[in-house]
Amino acid sequence: MAIHWNTEKLNKELGRIDGAILAGRYNLAMKLAHRSLKQYYGTYIATHNIPVEQMKADNVRAMAIYICRHLMAHFRKYEIPYNERRLMFITLVSNVIFLTTMSLYSEDDYLIDKATATYARENVDSIISYLMRYLG
Image (cartoon, rainbow, N blue to C red):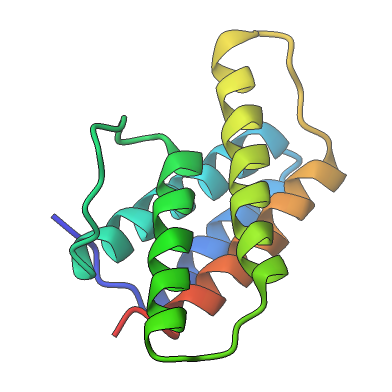
């Protein structure tokens, strides 16, 4: 079931990430950033009926690729100018967050620092805010 996303929902998720960062729980902040992207991407894919091949439900990087392909096709179809770097940014950041989060689950001593947690938080905000324009 898709979760309805709006500015209030985004701010609530960002607040949780901010709270984890303020508490010095950077690993938790990264996991929350990953979860937010996963939930939002799932909603976006379901809302737009994007056909996806078999993919793990938590594969944020694969979801980002499907979404960016969908957006590129949409922009081309309606001759909407778009920034390819912006779409590449989405996939790059999603990949970094995905790989970092998977490292957290595989290695007990892998620690996220404040800069990495803040990077994830800021980019989750940027990505979801950008994509929310196309959710409706």
